[in-house]
Length: 221
Image (cartoon, rainbow, N blue to C red; front, side, top):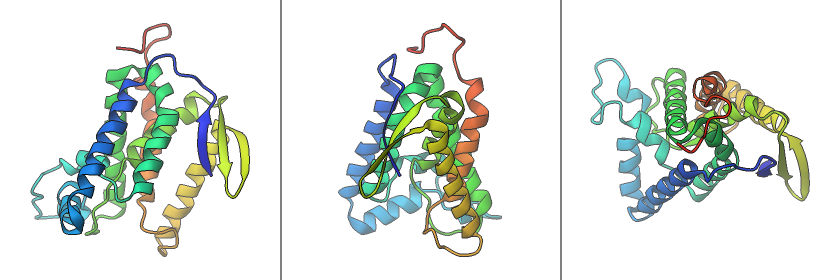
């Protein structure tokens, strides 16, 4: 399933969402100039490597990778999928929170998602990268804030459905939970940080209420 658009129009220009997309795109284009050895070095330095935080370990950048990792992406599909979903769901959340609160919410969800990955894979020596955890936080907030919204969804090869947002996002989170559980037994769903997705989604569901502006206040702060 791939979302094409939602039914809730923005009230304000989503400056933070556009800025996040631009920053992620610039970092990705920078990655493309490095070549494979340079990209690998970048991922291991600025991506989150759980094993670096084990007993007696001193990561060279400290805890900075819990933030920098969410601005790195491993492929065109990786960044396009994350930024597209952020574009569809993020504008409405930014509307309700305002710019300052929204960026804080986004980053906090991303950090919690990274922590969820660390707790579930503490011995992993592979760097985890991507905005998926932070974007999942936005999806978690949308799941509760816009349940009556509709999401135009493309289901390959040629089906289109107008799904209620809670159904689209509910299917997504159930898929993540299935793959996270399956990951404990095998790698059937591939090398994806599913626990980070679940951690971000849950963080968004819990924390959004502390960031929304009071009814009637402007969101363009």
